[in-house]
Each structure stands twice: as C-alpha cells, then as structure tokens.
Image (cartoon, rainbow, N blue to C red):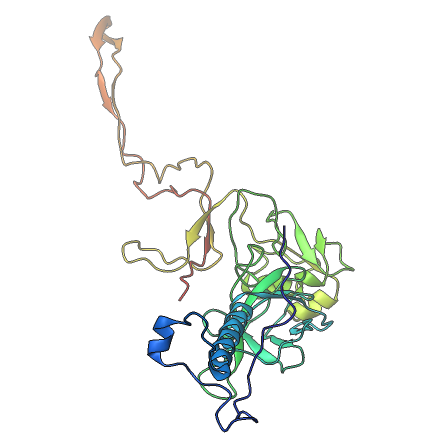
Length: 344
C-alpha cells in the first residue's frame, strides 16, 4: 500500500514578531531546564514556548522534504526536436538549479556534438562528461534514460550538468571497436569484411545517414587495399559519399587483433591497419635450413682389359651439394593491427 504524500507542511509562527496583546516576542525558546523537565501537571505553558516548538518542527520537516527533493533523482522527458539541445519541462517545476541535484532524463535525439540541458527554462547549461570535457557526439542515444548532476562549477558562468550514466549501447566514438559474444547492439555495426556502407541511395549493404561519419573515417585512414571504394576513389571522401559510392569494411574477419606501434623487444614497427600472417605457409627452398644429404649407392660393373672382361666395384658413398638458405619464414597468424587506447 502506497501512503500518499501530505499536501501541506504544518507551517506555524513562521513570522517572528511581538505579540499584539503583550510586549513579548511571539516565539521564545524555552530555557534548558524546562526542556529537560517538560510540562508539569496542570501547568499552563506560555504560548510563545509552544510557538517555538511548532516553528522548529515545521523547519525540520521542511528541511527533510527539501533534502529528499534535492537528493532523489527527478524524472523528465526531453521534448526537444533539435539534436544537442535537451529541453525538459518538469511538473511541478523546479524553482532553480541546486548544486548536486540529480535528474533522470529520457533523451529525444541522439547527440552529434557538444550538448546542453535546459530544465523548466532555467537556462541551457553545458553537459560535460565525467572527465569534465564537452560531449563529442554519440554519448546520448535517442530513447535512452540518462542521469545528470547539476554543478555550479568553479566560478560564476561555469555552471554545467555532469553526465553520470552511459548505457552499454554507448562506450566510444565513431570508429571505436569493441568485442562481444552477443548479437549486434544499437549504435554499433556488426563487422563482416564482405559488407559495405554508404548513403541511402547507394547499393551498400548498410545504408543511411547514420553511416556517414564512419564512411568518412574509413575512407581517410585506409586505402583501397583495406577498404575498397566502389567505382574507384574520387577527389574526396565527402564527394564519394555524395556520389552514392559504398566502401567495404576494413579487412578484419578471421584475424586476431595486434597492437599498433613499435615494441621495445620486437624489431618490426606495425603501422595501423597493416595485415600480416597466413593460415598456411609452404616453405620455399630459401626458407629451408641449410643442409646436405649423404647416401650410399653401391654398384658393380665390368670392363675389357687386354681383350678380357674384368669386374670391379664402383664407389658406394655420395654427398649431395648444400641446399636451403636458412632464411626466416612467416610464422605469424592472420593479424590486423589496431590502436590500443588507455583511458585517462
């Protein structure tokens, strides 16, 4: 059973003044001795003592109510039609922004860059990530509920909201890669080397404006050996996007991820996107160890000497010439080199 919240606080004697009938204050704190003893039998306590007790009771109840309102998250729905501008109308409305106040907001539009939050028209304030940096796009997904905390900042004019929660549909920015055992998730594209992306008018496997930024990213960091573009590459990524071309996903399927860069104890630097390794490898002669073989091949023969046939035995051991070059051969499994990032 839910107990309804009372609609009024027991406000009493909230205005200190002199009693109109007697020249004494209408609110007087009882002495400590009286607080300890309390009323005695048939005592008539002064009205201003009663007023003090009732006034303090009201003040404490109001304090607890305000604390509950300020600490408990307030739920609201974003009604904005503009990405990057979150607008919420709460009923009942808040009087003002309070330091540390929590808000749960259901977002209407996926953000594409730095964003603001405006509640009950109290003023649009920047939304910052947990590291105190502006949003860059993709942190707020349409239809998802997020938690925000209001902060007054270090100085006037630096007020902002801090984004507290990021559902699993977001944990990166365009171009990031993550691994999962589960099915594709909202905001993420399942990788498959044979699939492509492009605009709505293209013949790509996945097409639409949501793939624009990923198209541009792949186009600019990979060449056609890794991400071929249909019809060949034109003057720019944006021009080819508008020309309805599609781009194949980077070659990654069936390969293990390697880490981009130069190691302290490995001789070969690994550029981003490099593809190396073979599933099977047949050694060439140059890759075989330098070696030779000794084998026996006994035989007998005869010859004529002075008109008579004479038998004799030929040599029995043979040594082949050296073969093989002892050159290194491929022994790395199919690998694609990607960035390894450390969050700071």
